Length: 67
Image (cartoon, rainbow, N blue to C red):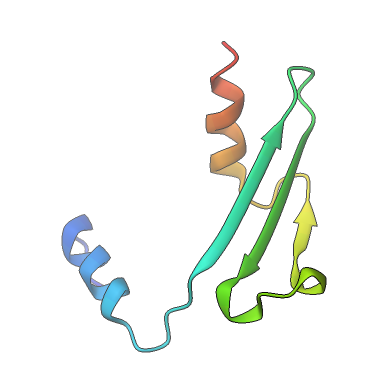
């Protein structure tokens, strides 16, 4: 994969095995969080992964909006 961020994005977007992923993150002011993740190819309700910190960078970003 290219080191340049723009080239890396183009590389990933054109990769034949890429899969779209849907993510949802909720954070409470108390600090509790919950994430839901699933691939677009597995678009069934029972194919959703859930957990407190599945997308840590997004949890951190949403938490930062409370500051």
